[in-house]
Image (cartoon, rainbow, N blue to C red; front, side):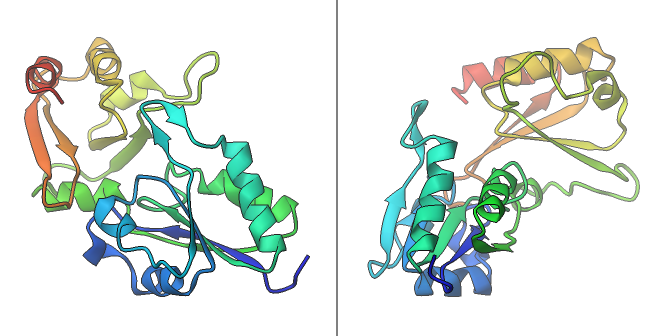
Length: 226
């Protein structure tokens, strides 16, 4: 293995290219290889440098270009050739971005790597929609959950606890499970009048915000084609 090969797990932020960190931008410009999916957003992806080898590993309409195991091996292979590899991810690599899985495989293979944090959509997207996720009078805690749990028996989410939480609940990638998650919250005791906002393409020029309550948001989302 070439001693200078290295992988950077880079968070690209929530989608607005101006929210890229200075370090992320520098590494993107210096990279030999950029391994990316669609989550960073079109404005960032179309500006990736042509000097780098660009490898799209995203999924389209449920079809994965590469499996996670194949992506892991790709990172190992290029770094083993002495390449500077940027694994570009939406948001932050370690918040539902599978960065932890990739880091474990890199460490197992003896590949040097560095995590470059990004601004998570869990904070930036509500902020850009005018929604503070904490407020001294209303929310002293924040809970972030995924809308896509790994398929296996049972759920790791404690719905009884989530329904009793007095803070802000943020569900990332939650549109497809809206019809499942919302009824569960109400079934376990959440107030049906609790305000809800669905934010699509947050921080981008075409951002869309759909609002309602726990009892109405599923129907509103269907009517508006969310």
